[in-house]
Amino acid sequence: MLRNGAAGGGGPAAGGAAGHRPVRVWCDGCYDMVHYGHSNQLRQARAMGDYLIVGVHTDEEIAKHKGPPVFTQEERYKMVQAIKWVDEIAPGAPYVTTLETLDKYNCDFCVHGDDITLTIDGKDTYEEVKTAGRYRECKRTQGVSTTDLVGRMLLMTKAHHSNIDEDLDYRKHTDNFGKGPKGHSPWTGVSQFLQTSQKIIQFASGKEPQPGDTIIYVAGAFDLFHIGHVDFLEKVHQLAERPYIIAGLHFDQEVNRYKGKNYPIMNIHERTLSVLACRYVSEVVIGAPYAVTADLLDHFRVTLVCHGMTEVVSDKDGSDPYEEPKRRGIFQLVDSGSNLTTDLIVQRIIKNSTKWCVLGQTKHGTAAASSEGEVLFDRCGSLGLQREVIVTLGGSSGLEFEARNQKKEAKELAVLEAMKRLEEKH
Image (tube, rainbow, N blue to C red; front, side):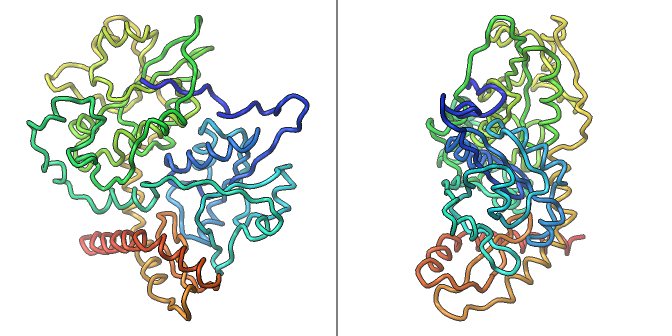
């Protein structure tokens, strides 16, 4: 059980300390296929000041510099706004961050991760603000990237769950956070993310329910936390004047039971952080039981149980998992107005695989190093595929960046090969 922060920013009040001008912070990016790594960047940025403005690029800008995005700009705007550390979004932010942009929004400085972002012609998009001393850096979240997530969708076979014996201890004891005997989830085996108590605390510092709050319980996989989930949670949030939403997350093995294939894409650790970052959620139950029982309802003093319009799969014994809240008359179906599901996201990616494959292969095959330290790898396409760009940064910095990306490049090439095989099948 993890209590989350209240809706709104996760740092100091927007007004700043008494007698001091509030520090306004700027972040910008594509924010396509938003994951907890993005949320963690915004959390760190918000902690550097009092008010966080996030600029989100348009579809046109992203297509020009990186390739077509998976999500539309309207979907991406709403997704970023739902992250609890974001105070304001700036739609249509320019791809290159300038002093003019910072001044327009009265921001003191901008914050970006410790990687290099380049334009299509190889220019550092933050060069101007770096030179002016209005740039701050935060740590990237290890173990997750858009490329990683796409790789999980495309590289894993439908039979990859079958390598786990039904009698292993972690099948019997679900308090292991879904981890297999080698320290990674057998259901999302390619994940390199390592959960820590500190990371959970950073995401989950919040308040207990107060007298007068309406405690609402929702449950599910919340896999690849996306705009469909946000739309649903926003609708649930609107059901009460003072909502306190508890999200129950099912363990990986339970999700695989009712979703099949290679689901969940994200393991229980990752899904926990993704949901905790949402401003509409107050508390998360890690490894919630599939059936919403009387004990659960009584323990959390639940007033209302909500479910979306997606199909409810029966429990292992064939029973309705919502039988108890229905018996109590506290069950409600909520229509989010969105038809987006994790399955549809995967279909979007597969549908565009030809474009990304051609683009990625072209970019990987066209550049060659002219001297030591001159070849850098720039993220290419909304999938995080990279293109080789000839840029002279001067020996050591170039080599350092190249070393940091060698493993990533190998992974991306594997994704490209998977896309190519997928296209040949069709």
